[in-house]
Amino acid sequence: MKKLKIHVYGIVQGVFFRYSTRKVARKLGLTGFVKNMPDGSVYIEAEGPSDKLKELLNYVKIGPETAEVEKIEYEFKEAKHNFKGFEYSI
Image (cartoon, rainbow, N blue to C red; front, top):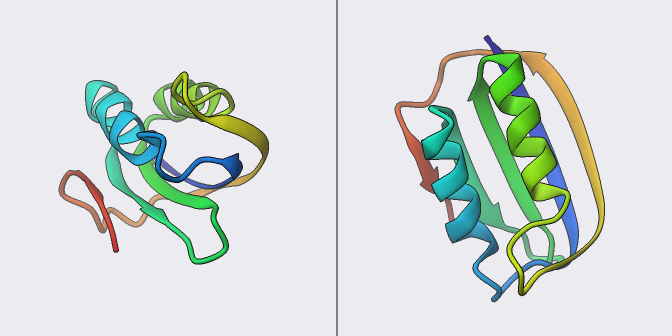
């Protein structure tokens, strides 16, 4: 089990990015959260098997149709098992 932290930049707020990310993460069986940041980016923390985290990472590189992802920053860490499901965070 690993943790993946992702910052997504571009036109990623107000385009169903959080909703679609949560949907994909839940389908992959991941736990964690996704939230909008004050600078206009989206921040994601997800925990689960490495292969499923890589699938999520591949998804957020593109995002939903209405998004325009300009860049992402990410890092893998050891999971801390702090999450019960995958939710939006404020």
